[in-house]
Length: 348
Length: 128
Image (cartoon, rainbow over all chains, first blue to last red; front, top):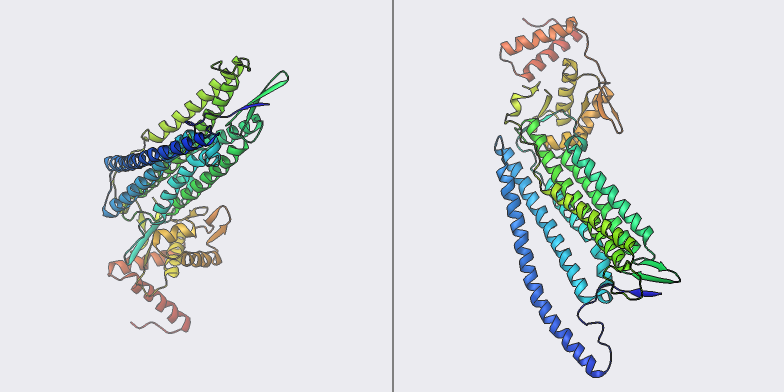
């Protein structure tokens, strides 16, 4: 069986021979390490700058849509805005770190960082967990009612009441697509991270392919994202109502928080499936000998076309996920009226 | 339009009793009707900033009085119907109207009614 690995780095694993060659190899590693440290520092600085820009943009957008009936509502809205900014910082930072680790994995080659690559598959979902975790912490630290006299509306609230229905349906769709993609790739794989093409008596394999090696961590992390999102929606529904604001305004603020959580959850789901499709498509196209560089493997249009379709589907899903995450919702704040104008009380 | 529950954390009346009395009054007044769902224990406790156990005790007392019933998955639902218009109801409404007209507080009106009930039970004529 012939087996080809994914792209290797600039010669770290291949220089294996005499003493001279070994000495040159050590020099090369030291030089690479120095360059990598410089690159790492620059990368961290860039990452920090992007995280700060993303957070400030999130806060600015939130302030642009800010309408609050009183000081308590303004405080609640500010709390929601800071929570969102922290969550966005977590998400952007973790996603960019994922990309950085991905590039590092390519530079050092599969022999060096196979374990890292396995974790890499679950990193988008881990970024989502951090995003949702930041939201959950923000909701758990929501301003509590203060003062000697407190009031509450006798209205039942459930997560379903605060969740935008269409976005919830789309998030379920993304969850189903993630499950389908993981199962399909595991079934198509010939090994934990390998896919094989049989030509006559010969078989040709390519890795990486999202088999069980990548699929199981993705499935576990995605399930955790789903559970965390559901728990956070429950916390949003049961958090204290904003004092002095109408129920409509309070529910609007809850819907806003719930929308942010679902947008993050669906985004990491879409990016996870897109990344899996990218790797699967690459493997299929190489097995189809797309660039005809593999002399002993005959060109296969079927493999190339299927790879192209898988890549296109992943790219489309990733783009839709980004658009759904970024396009503003058409849910304007209700007219500002105080609670006293909308409810009755039996208490004096 | 929805009903409110208001508590005074500095009041001598226990908080669970304040909640229980107000929900019972809302049911009696017909503001809460049969089948209406009440908020969950945690939601109402969070909204009022008090311990969930306090709300759970108030709901427990209401359930014991037959005003609400708690079921898993459904939550707490009002079961009692508004009593039909009656002479006691009309007299209570009149008492409330007179108490308001004379500037009595809720506690003073409650005390007045409690005193009348005690005197009636003991057979003593009220002092004029």
